[in-house]
Structure formats: structure tokens, C-alpha cells
Image 1: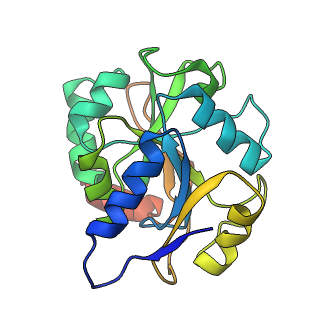
Image 2: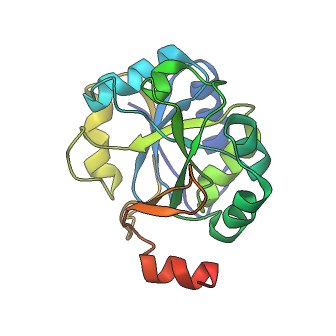
Image 3: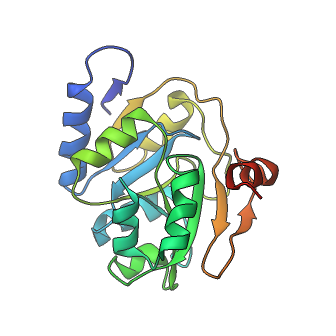
Length: 208
């Protein structure tokens, strides 16, 4: 299993290696602004099935996606101007927002549901990687379903040894926890899961 460090040195090798794996339908493990994640092409059903297998996750449970900008999020989900202004305040950042999707992504990704979680992560590796790709990334925490999210590549690396993971990006120890999940399928946002951003902090960001 190839492991590449994402540090202060040259990063072209990291992005080239990650792009190569992802564009061939492969899966990578890497850092984010929350915990280590498993990533793949969100438009490729076979890639998504690989991640379900890695996670040992039931098919009814949907995966969220990472996008490079709000325009891309609006391509895949119903997001009006008012909701887009909300996103401008919380993205990039550790807030996953759930919207009704436009059925432009594989059904296996959404678990047959009419909603999808979307986020722009605030991490240099993912921000630049997303800019280099012409598809969003299916993303989920790097752990077996129901297990604790992993904050180090040493912990996450065990998944790579037993699966079809093509590359691991070592981004060091990650100090934070999972993202906050907000349901914005209706008129007002509702917190479904508290995470790095608390309700109080979210209210402050939004000026509530």
C-alpha cells in the first residue's frame, strides 16, 4: 500500500498520485478538516460500491459528497439563493448540509433517498484536489461503519491493508472531530448532528 506524506514540501506528486487513482475508479484515504476520510468518484457506481465494502456499511445508508464550490453543489441539489447565502457563511468548513438532490448522481450513493449531504471541506489537500477533478468526491470517515472516526493515518491505514484502497495520504494527526450535519431541505436549517461546529457557534456565524 503506497503512503504519501502531505507536508510542507512539494505537493505535485501527492496530487498527481491521488488524481491517477481517482480517475481510474479507485479509492483513497486522506485527511480532511475533521477526521481521515475515504474518497472516490461520486459519479462512479462501482467506486461507491467499493467504499460500501470497505466500510461494511448497509446499502440503505447514503454517503455525502465533497464539492469544489457552491455552483457545483447547486448542480446536484436544489439550492435556492437564500440557501446559497447560508452556504457562503459556513463553507469551506466542517458543516455538512443536507438538500434534496436532482437525481444526477448514482442511486447507490444516495441509498434510494431523495436527499444528499454536501460539503466544501476547509483543508488544503481536498480544496486543491477538488479543483483538479471534474467530478465531486463521495466521502465518508475512514472507519468501519459504527466505529470511531480515525484521526491518524496509522489508525486509518488498517483499512487500506484489507481492501481496495489505492493510496493513503498522510496528513499527520488531526485534532478535530466529525462535521456538524444540518438539514436544509425545508425553509430553515435544523442541526441533525453536533460536531466540530456547535449550535451556538453556528448561530453566531449566521447572526442568529
